[in-house]
Amino acid sequence: MAVNQSELQQQRMSAKSPQKKRKASSLSASVAPQTTVKIEVKPSSPSENPIVVSFPSGVPESLQRNASSPGTAIPLFHWQKLSMKSSSGRKVVGRDKHCTYSASAAGLAYDDRRTKLCIGVYNKAKGTVVIREAASRGTVFSLQQSIPSYIEKNGHVQFQAGQNLLSYENAVFEDFGSAKKRKALKSRAANQVELTSVIGAGDDSAVLHQVIQGEAMSESNRKAIAERRIPTEEEAEAVNGSGNTAVDAAHEAARKKFLPPYDGLAVKPHKVYNPREIVGEAAWKKVYNRVHASMHDNDPTSSIVGLIFENAWQPSILKLVKSTNIEGSDCKDRFTCALLANDLMRFYANNHKRRKIFAIDPTKKSHFGISMEIASRCVELFTTSIPDDNENGEMAHAMSKQDKDKCIVHILLLYLMAHGTVMKIPDLKFIALDLKLPVNDCAQMLRLAGCQTTKTGTALSVMLKTPLQFPRPKRIVNKS
Image (cartoon, rainbow, N blue to C red; front, side):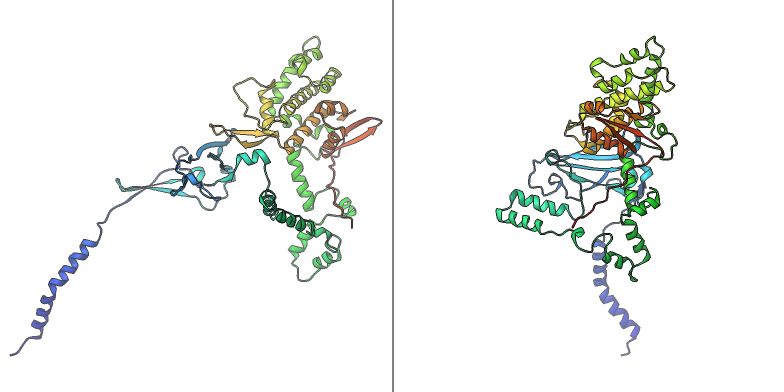
């Protein structure tokens, strides 16, 4: 019997078709139904943008899913302005039972990021993904962790590369180590060798000279080492204090943080420093207007003395005010500088020993007898922000050693300008007595400001001359 080949093929396919149908139905049943997700990109809004933070030092225990202590309080975070004068900078401050977490973003003018973070929130019910830019133009706030109780006891510790780890290890063993381990640490510290103590490692050594002149060194490295080297006296005289070395540049940067703004090219001494820039335009105008009104009285000096309560006057400032010549063309500026110096001295006396200085209340007219304009300026210039333990998340302030020295030099310069265009203080002992500081310390402060001192008998006088010259940084001489 002849069988058609095509018919056999059709029979075989028909025999397998039920199995294929079952497989196809099972596959179709295993595939999940397709859904449509709508993506919405919302415009940036400071009031709605999410705040994104990271914990590089470790996530707090209370925020971990497998927290061992369920009752641990969750950190309370506050979103604040970085400065009351600017609307762009922001900071995040959080506190729990033991630690403080803080981070900040300087603002639009300091935006140097290459990437910016956006957050997408998926709504399963609506099938939408809403994408928003993170707060402060996509910033991820890296929270720095600190322990307020430790800072209050030991103060702030500045990080020094390669040194803080060793000091931390030593501190741990000093507190918890055995007597044998502490003895070993002392022996290791006694055997440490400083680089400057090695023969041939100084600036004028033959070894360094051979390295700089070596053919294998690149020109850029050779220039960097040459700029870092402290110049000799002949080289210093050759540059005429132009500050073209790395040491001079660093010293100049530190001087600008310590002193008020100055004009290094001023021809007249009284033009070097501007008292308006020291206290700010608002504080200067308020005090100057009061002095101007007092000049219309029959006895201007007595009227100016009456502007401040008798027990609030500093004796050195009161003596200077009473001896000021009211016929001089610069008498108003001199009276204003004297009054401002008196207020700064009162701020220093009231706060330099305080562990915390709380924020100035702008609704009040004065702050411990000082006008709000001057008090706010003093807090801005002469204090450092520190975290406070109150529930409002506000930042307190304190005067560090650098802040105290900065305040003193500003007081001395205002006192110097209150003597008139001659810019000379006949004797420093009166204001040094009021500041409760040694006369030599006050003289050193003014030397750093470019003044020259002269001792005549027991009197130490100070005078500012032009062209302005600052003392050069001291060279460290190693005696072998």
